[in-house]
Length: 331
Ligand code: NAI
View 1 (cartoon, rainbow, N blue to C red):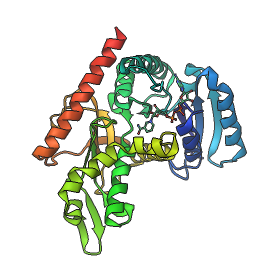
View 2 (tube, helix red, strand yellow):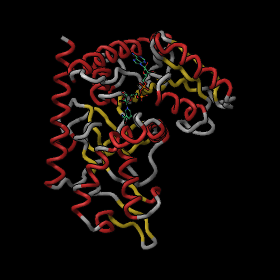
View 3 (tube, protein in one colour):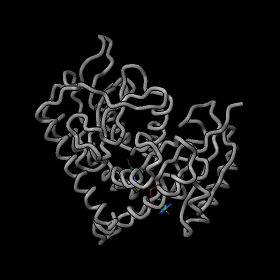
View 4 (tube, protein in one colour):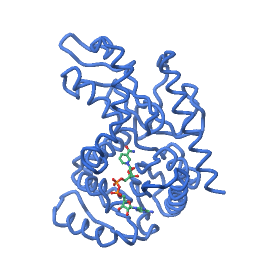
């Protein structure tokens, strides 16, 4: 028998949590043969709702689900986990300053970093979903120094998938035939969805998206803003923020990281910058990555034109400011 993998989901009583935990229990994240034990953390006001989610997981009788830990105790939640999906955080409420939201999340991610550091399995892989995702991941990295920095990432796969979806809709092709879009930078409205290297599989072979769309104004205008603003469009339509697409993308992120990216395909992940593409080192920044044997690496050698350069720099600048703001909350 295969040993179960312990997967932590924080904020598990929330919207994304509710969509995500059944996907994990069904094998969407780690494959149809991998048993899992779910660890679910939320805060005391959500304890009853969290227990309701646990009841439903039992009722769903998932064959792969070998156990459920539902708790409001951070240490218990983190004990022995191999994968941690950090969805819990403090939302921005009306009238709150950016600094106040940052300060709340910095203190949450600082303490959860320490709990993971102490109690998680060695080599635990971490995905931060909660906003500000890049900067929360950076704080987590700073306060969990024994977790390798390559193991701490944030979610920009939803933005990546949104970009694939927009190209597929525009060209009226299957989304699975579109690949190698890139999300650069912050999971925010300064992110840069880039199709410079994206292709579509056609009957006449692989074709560049730029050639097929043949409308640079759209690619440099509405395409980019639609992807950047998609989260707001979902909130407007649903009166709630994206949840099923966020949960599904979180599964994609972990699956491709752990099981590997398909040959010739890269994906976008927020990772600790090593200075590739002249992005300042020491930021959590979204890059194109491939993964093999559970280790991601940044795709190297892509040409960056002048238009792209400005966009890469602008989103890096925002992240540098966010980092400074986060540090100012620590002192
Ligand atoms: P939600 O408000 O429905 O759920 C959040 C849950 O986190 C709540 O149950 C809350 O009690 C819990 N929580 C709060 N503080 C906690 C703590 N210290 N420890 C553990 N749990 C805690 O929110 P939703 O819609 O599920 O979104 C969650 C986060 O994901 C938000 O920050 C949102 O902005 C972010 N998000 C990120 C996306 C991305 O692509 N990176 C996409 C969509 C949402």
